[in-house]
Length: 214
Image 1 (spheres, rainbow, N blue to C red):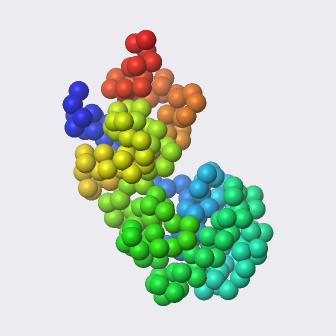
Image 2 (cartoon, one colour):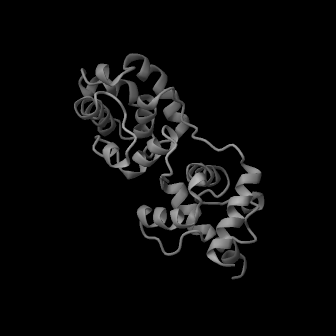
């Protein structure tokens, strides 16, 4: 099967089995989402969703968050991974958001990456989820699933995976495809013991066929 045909097959599968695919992070506006995405690094969305209600009740705007020391933010996020660094990132992000963008979360990926704690992956999430831009964030799930199915080939970095995926996914589906791959990796194509028996892509999956032909 050619690469383009593989993408068409995979997209058709997800469109049929997962017509609604969106972030599992809970948020009401762009500021709340950027806070949640920063917290989600190496932490589950479920844990982040437990943390953010109290955190955002205390710091509902960048202007309020920018006025405190990271230690105060730490008290609200200490149950997530790397709370010291994330507290510093959140306060720094709030300050820079005010300094550079008048407190408004920008839509441009390059502008977003000027904020502390915001790398390309986080920037792509914000641009995609909030502003519906055709950007594709590659986290560990996307990286793994794309490689296993064969959508990416010999990609050593998230950026390499992103560029390969963007070449074949129609622009109008890029934002949705990000969630398809994440959710598939989170619940079916899991890292240690993928649930291949529940997957409808085994016929074309490079990983599955390699495992079963040895």
